[in-house]
Amino acid sequence: MTNLTLRQMRYFEALARHGHFGHAAEVCAISQPALSMQIRDLETSLGTALFERGPRQVRLTAFGEDVAARVRGILRAVDELEDLARAARDRLVGRLRIGVIPTVAPYLLPTIAESLATTHAGIDLHLRETVTPKLLQELAEGRLDTAIVALPVSEPGLTEVPLFSETFVLVRPESEAGQPVPGAEALREMRLLLLEEGHCFRDQALSFCKMQTAAPRELLDGSSLSTLVQMVGAGIGVTLIPEMAVPVETRSAAVAVARFPEPEPERTIGMIWRRTSPLAPQLQQVAGIVRAAADRLRAVA
Image (tube, rainbow, N blue to C red; front, side, top):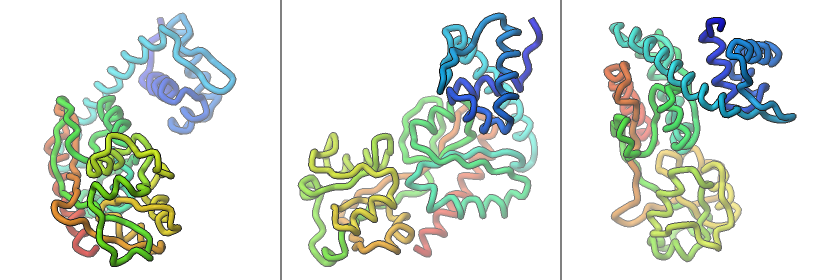
């Protein structure tokens, strides 16, 4: 059997993850024919098919599933060697892959990127915005170095470092400004607009309202806080958003913002990374930079 290359393994892993030659080729920054040729060479070397090819997508064969698990382990080990080399340097340089949940990313990422560029001139920042379950998966698979999420995540293999806490505020139509702020019980009887399934902020809002699932009267599952706020401005219902999002999301909507009475609903935002990561000391430094950036942002909000 011809020796397999790391490049082939990375192409294979991308195709296994995306299930589509075009998408995998785009991620790998090569042409689709070139990716297809590399996969066929890999299958020829192994002597059997790795994928079932359909008209619109590809699926791993049973053998391909076994190979995928081993390839991911190999690539993770190679990445850890690179991390060891970076950790041996005096300062953090090179690639740093940070994942961020969508209810934090638009408001905090620009400040974080500016701060890291100032304090670590040699850093190559790769940012990824997606929901917590995907961030945890990509972190476990070694495709991210760290992630900024709502704590706790309670994963035994991860280190959790709290960064800051922020409250949730009520957003309602501008015509309702000055009216008494409803409590959690009253919110359950209102048309509460929420983010779609998979967002941890949805679960936190439901928890505050002591609702296990969304009520039948809920009209909209939104993909972003911006959508929810605009719908509130159109008079469709009310919603909750984190305090950090208020300056951005309410500036162009006909809405009123109100704080809840004590105890206000809140969440803790923190950084997480693998306990085994050689970059742990450097990531502690990054956590301090992110915390300071968040403090500056909230001070001017």
